Amino acid sequence: MKQIEAIIERASDGTYAVFCKDEIFSGAGDTIEAAKADMEQQMAFYKETAKEEGFKYPDWLDGEYSVDYTVDMTSLMAYYVGNGIFTLAGLEKVTGISQKQLWAYLNGTKPRKAQQDRIASGLRSLNRDLSTIFA
Image (tube, rainbow, N blue to C red):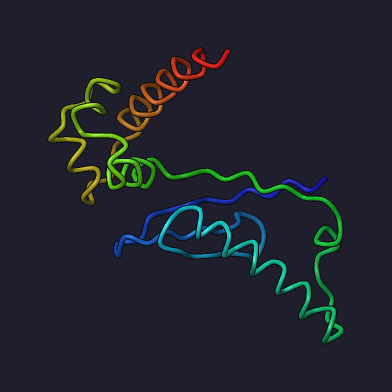
């Protein structure tokens, strides 16, 4: 089965874009789910059009494939804060990074690698805690 890697990013207008790392496909939407669905539709449309027009297209589109999505750190935080799921106070507790600094990350300041690692570590810890609920 073909594994496709795709990156999801939040655009400056608040919409989301998804694009494949090593393939030509991309999508956009008002939400992460909408952007993923748009990319999947684009892939199906590309295949259908190529077949109708007699163009060559990647063989893997005829078989099974899966897309592994990675959301960039700032986009992930913006999505959950913007939807009221996380608060800056909650993220501060999970990551150990001040609300002021987290706000800056959500509004254009790119976090350094060390800060990205702290955020990722905090969110993974939260994920582990939540996963135990259903174990």
